[in-house]
Image (cartoon, rainbow, N blue to C red; front, side):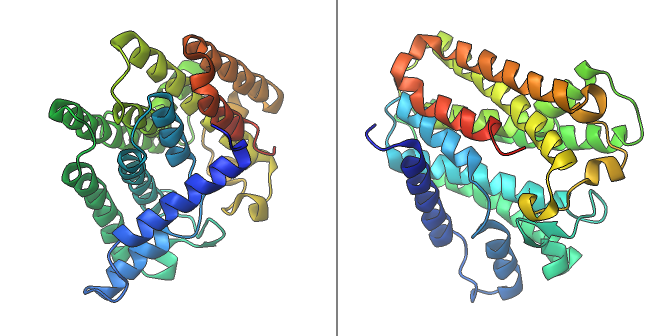
Length: 297
């Protein structure tokens, strides 16, 4: 681990971008409009936080980079699909994502729906067609883990909870429950799938990694809520202030900005505590954590 974090992260981001570009269907492949929309929704944007977590967890477990790349791409495709669907009029009804028109604005609602469906399918195709672990049962565990994180007991369930909570006053535990599923489940997948690509961790260590990922997933959402309240649309690349406009419960609406920031710092420390037994092998995970939590408020 010789490169500084900025260089390492840039290399990982470029690497995953190249992989995604080559594994998404070509824009001129029939049906062209759908494939163009898939590429539009995935390529050329985003910080690739989830792949960075996968690469960092893979480094900790001395995993083969090619294996981690495939797993990281699968998680990123699920994330991209979720954004396409979240932006639809029936969900958050947003017109801007990553600084450009959302998929249903650039194309149309039907194409956006099919784009999300197709990105989800491609994610599981990638996970199943390459050898990602020496033990086939581990690879099946990876597929199951991402499926659960994406579905009603994970991201989709969290989104359903989110939609149902509009206009309501939630307790802090209720909000945490929602975001453990909506945001946190996929971040945990990113970490665990990267780790599963290696083969040197015991059950206790995997539990420690999972706890780390849970803390990071919640911290990610806390920071997002603060940014939504304080940052500009130009800075975010998406419409600022949407949560308050839509009367959604957030960490800021429950705690206020100052206490929300304190919570993010507490979650950061809890995440680091979960990594203490890994010593320097977890350096990249700590760096990615700070990259997530110390985004500009």
